[in-house]
Length: 159
Image (cartoon, rainbow, N blue to C red):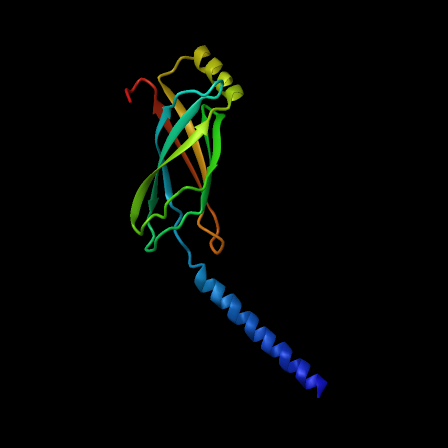
């Protein structure tokens, strides 16, 4: 009697496990990674020795569903020097097949800022390369999206 009962519970547990796995597979339907573009970097009034920046990003959602964003971790390198990194949890959901601009506030890493300044003064150039890395977290049930964008900023172009 106990042997048939334990065999029944084992089968029931396996069926339940298979249903849960199948349910999770339908929940985590593959979403396309959003595109993240650097739109602008603006100097803000400094606070003592801390230089503040406003970084404007454009996030493009090419999915057929709204992309809820619980938070973002980001970093911005200029000429290979990581100048800015930060996090934000103040990002509105992005509707299906649309884009939104997000403005993030950040503080400059002074050590790497001085290294960048030394590098630019040694070799004056009209353009600065950048690398933007972002990790967008849509929530607990979906995996985070990791995005890397590279480009060039023309420093002679008026803002």
